[in-house]
Length: 189
Length: 189
Picture 1: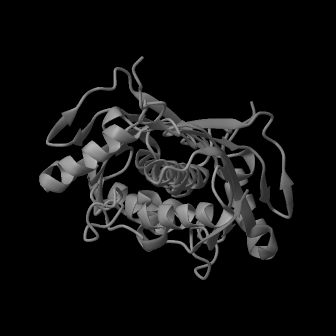
Picture 2 (picture 1 turned 30 degrees about the vertical axis):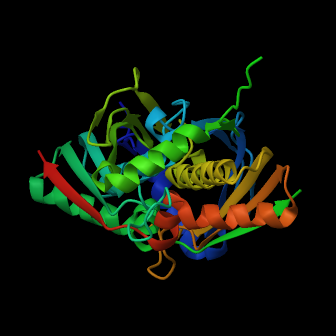
């Protein structure tokens, strides 16, 4: 009888994970990634982004066979026809998704088996800012609250530590809390 | 023969738009909105957000009959199975969608008919940050570049002004460039 040691934990191949980390430690130039989206206006508040290729580990990554398409919209009260979540809701989703994946990866690396990760997010906005009615309120959310419920085979304190570490590593949490320089170029015609 | 004046421009009902602005000017408490998302881990890098109800104009808005569901994932090189765009790509989409809608609304308010709005976005990331390999690079994008192509029945200078005004009003552009306070609460079990 042979003994097999699976390296899959929480659906993450930790063998590959540690090999990837070692590879990047030795060749930091492989850590340069570029992600992209292209967007097209459909009409009114309806627009659609296409997400497919990206640059990773020294070259273009074309492993995705099909593009992802994402429809945005606004509800009626914000003059749309509900053709998709609105942009601010997409930002909440980006934050939830990134924190969740970070929790799952950190737990996998620390040999903690998770059974459930759920979160609810809420962002408060005074729309006078974005509507240009009053210069005082900011355009975006004043604050975002995230409530996680994390269940797994570890003491509560360990699960809290994992969430804390995930916050420290999450790409979108970093961007949403600290901001990113954005350059906008326009070609009118 | 009667003469009908349509208030629809760029797919936006500008009559309703100006009525909404007037209403909020008179009753600023109606400008308090709250948007939400709830997220559930499926396995590995796969998680799904549900977006439906929100608070707007003095009460819960339940006008959406069905919830939007958004699947996130990671490509193979980041240990996922490509179950959806990754969280950083969702953030690019949120930014593209918000700037585009802002451009369309600002143009409608200024009586400019647009014929096309297209954009490409790219975010550069050194993944040593998010992977925890090196404390030096930040976790998120170092920078985001947005390239807009805007076509409409107006001089180039006017179209540039509209994009500039849209940047000043966009909720997600504000959040991504300036950051937002995020409070994360954890309930382990």
